[in-house]
Image (tube, rainbow, N blue to C red; front, side, top):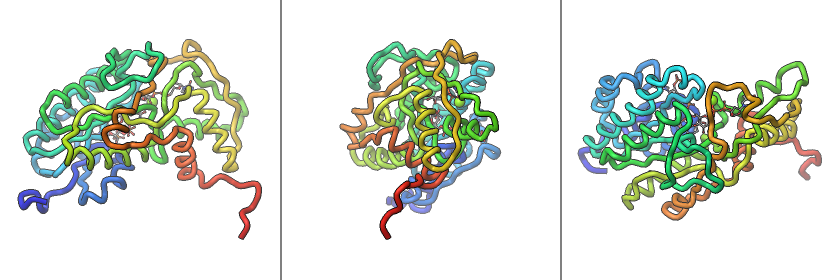
Length: 308
Ligand SMILES: NC(=O)C1=CN([C@@H]2O[C@H](COP(=O)(O)OP(=O)(O)OC[C@H]3O[C@@H](n4cnc5c(N)ncnc54)[C@H](OP(=O)(O)O)[C@@H]3O)[C@@H](O)[C@H]2O)C=CC1
Ligand SMILES: Cc1cn([C@H]2C[C@H](O)[C@@H](COP(=O)(O)OP(=O)(O)O[C@H]3O[C@@H](C)C(=O)[C@@H](O)[C@H]3O)O2)c(=O)[nH]c1=O
Ligand SMILES: [Mg+2]
């Protein structure tokens, strides 16, 4: 550590209360002190306040896990989504460049239109179908064109032990008294990725890019692919193994699911660049799911007791 950086916090973390942010507080702890102003104290839509905070904290790295992630609601307030997802990352990148410190930022599979039939590489053409995706694309462009040493990590279908996510919604639906089937779209393909995996990957990529200078855009997601419907069935199968009573799942089409938002039919990310560059091994979505269910519900019940 240089003399100038001694005493400065290791990380300024935005969105530390979110799914990925919560896991980042664990995964980045070995780097040193983490300053994580909560949303209530710092609004990313306030560019001046954001700039002031970065200058006051003068961290040795900035990690932005804050985002406007309410996909349907973004259709109704695209300007707010753009301010948080599109503009704030540019402010952070300019400040990171000014401090000469690295920035990590996250983006989404929803920058793609889903017309592909094979996993999207980083260089594949983007064409977001909804306001959230458009705002996230603006954010990744702002970061990548800033000149800051930055990692932009695109990931997909994030869920985990903490926070609002699809798995939490499914487990809540399982608690309903009626045994009516849960109806879930079966014609959108992607890779459910756990927040813990993303946070661990972040720590690894940051540590790899610092000496090598391999900054840039990378896809970071679980290995394999599934549909939301099959993911729901896997969640319920895993929950049932942990003693939870679960409802049946009925696969429906996107057209049958009432939503104001268009979502990509296919958004599997090709993660081979991060594998080649940093040796990141993408764990399968199924084994990530097991870990998250262990964290949320405890270990699966075994039918045959282990010998003691
Ligand atoms: N969730 C997903 O399925 C996916 C997410 N991503 C990306 O990964 C990153 C992390 O997402 P995830 O952890 O799931 O997000 P969450 O929605 O779980 O957390 C977002 C965090 O950002 C905070 N936040 C929202 N608006 C503001 C604001 N105006 N000012 C300050 N803080 C704010 C939230 O605080 P509060 O709760 O108080 O509003 C929350 O702590 C994001 O960049 C997201 O776009 C990429 C692909 C999939
Ligand atoms: C709750 C529910 C959802 N669905 C559908 C809606 C949608 O197509 C899919 C997943 O639901 P969600 O509400 O999680 O969808 P959504 O919020 O669009 O998820 C996205 O969030 C953003 C932040 C991302 O970046 C994406 O990677 C992706 O994870 O399942 C059902 O069919 N039945 C249900 O009961
Ligand atoms: Mg959602």
